[in-house]
Amino acid sequence: MFRRRGVQIRVALLALCLSILSPSGQAIENLGILGAHPRWSVLEKYQETITHDDFTRLVQDVYCTHGFGDESIKIDNESARILTNRDAQSFFTLHFAKDESSRKRVPRLWRPAKSLPPTKPDKPLSGLRIALDPGHLGGKWAKMEERWFQVDETTPVTEGDLTLRVSRLLAQRLQKLGAKVLFVRNSTQPITSKRPADFKELARKILVKNGVPQPRMRGEILDPNDSEKEQTIRWQSEILFYRYSEIRRRAVLVNTKLHPDLVLCLHFNAEGWGDPKSPNLVDPNHLHLLVNGSYLKEELEFDDERFEMMRRLLSRAYDEELPLAESVAAAMARETQLPPYQYPTTLTTTKVGSTGYVYARNLLATRLYRCPVVYCEPYVMNSHDAFARIQAGDYDGMREINGAQRKSIFREYADSVADGLAEYYRNVRGL
Image 1: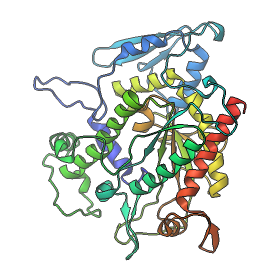
Image 2: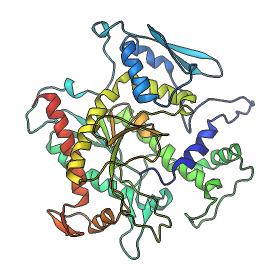
Image 3: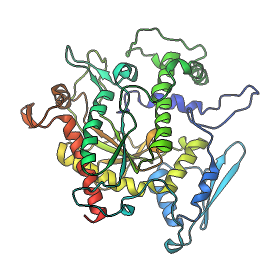
Image 4: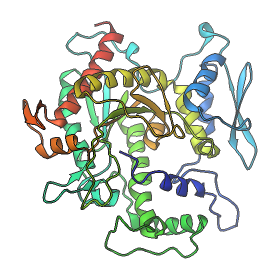
């Protein structure tokens, strides 16, 4: 779930653009938050691996659906010119393959389904490396993340703990289907070694840059209803810790040690619940999945995000993750009977595929993990139905909840994801 802290955070941090000045007074980089200097030479290995038509399709229909400046990406018949540094006005030229028959092999560490060796029908995931990424942290960090609420004396709902429980159940299912399962997170401890205190100075610079000349620290007592909390050093420091630093470190783990063929990002969704100690329970309950894409024009202004998008496009991850997401979405819809979520605005997302459940969106994890990523957002945690099922906990078999016989919500989640993956790989592998 990623909507409660929402647009205000993204806009506030986006405006910084790391155009913070170096000691010499010069802007150091045009980078996203905690972004790394892009190595554009990496893209040389993708020369002549994609045709003009495929490149144009992916740019227009998937990655740049909100448009892009001619200076950022300029597509000609035989090549594309991509801006590498706005200040230096430097560019990278990508040469297209003349046609499919002359197209060079796409270099990548992950393996698409069609390249996997033959296997048995009861082991459709044999040979596949799947990394499970339970969203958020949970535990003592849940209140900081604003992924915590409690109704009266019931068990608190903490998203990071819920996703960890699902991931452990899902791992068992995937292993039985033949997969090698890897955990990006398997505890409530952060992957990053940084903590909010490490980001106080950067948080102060962000606030000053965004028109808060004397930002306050904010007290030790957390007050989620503080209307000015976004203007505090503490709040900004926490965001930099648990969102940006944590996810970037997870990406390093995925890309340099785990080397999976697929990452499953597991989340629960929510509607606004107000005061977490007296939350609003709502009727809507829904499901959707995300793949990477739908970059905003202002996001493409960052040198690192433009590079990361281009590397992802050229790796052809989308051609694998969309049918994967569609298969998982169909299985989850069938199992959960949840309707598709409809974004109230198309400013940040683009609906893709044919099921109605899958959207493209530029999230940090889906952009940085260098393999196909399926990002699951089922259930509204503070819906009446999901809340009752969460309170029931995990259990074998069926129980009556809200007048209906139901599986444990955690097993339903895990089973439906596993079923969707098994169906996809059986079909592609001809089992």
